[in-house]
Amino acid sequence: MTQLSRRQFLKITGTTVAGSSLALLGFMPTAALAEVRQYKLSRTTETRNTCPYCSVGCGILMYGLGDGAKNATASIIHIEGDADHPVNRGTLCPKGASLIDFIHSPNRLLAPEYRAPGTNEWQKISWDDALDRIAKLMKQDRDANFIEKTADGKTVNRWLSTGMLAASATSNETAYLTHKTMRSLGMLAFDNQARV
Image (cartoon, rainbow, N blue to C red; front, top):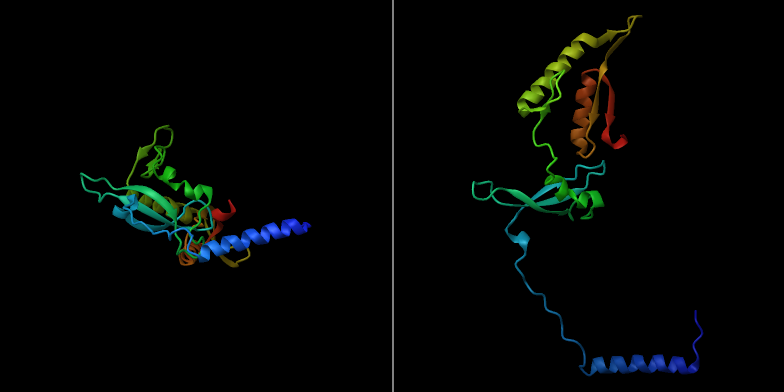
């Protein structure tokens, strides 16, 4: 602690007494009043979601303007952290805070795309077509490569030719169901985005 001389101590004490005396006599700033303003988010629709970037699973609030009608195309105009979310309590990392740029990026894919073998062009397909194709290819591969028993007769029920990479920004329940579904198919190569 610094050493105060007697003169410095008296100056500090006198200034403190004078300041508090002025406040007691009524010479103090007026109370600040809150002013209600109309902000840009008052007309928006709030939607809760989860940040897609990493395995933490931070909660976000997305604010959309427009109702999807012909004269008002729905668009997200603001994203912030969800203060009620137990993971992040309203905070976001720099990547999560810049999600609005991710959403409005001209390079963002909005539909599944398929590239036929031997071509270099991608064509857009529907979600139903994409899921049907994935299911058909998985079934073909599992039927061709499923190992029910080892050479010495032990039952193993393995499917070694296909793997699964699961999303990590999901709930425990969804992760449990994904894991159980893939394991029930016999798939051993199962990993999570959090480790990639």
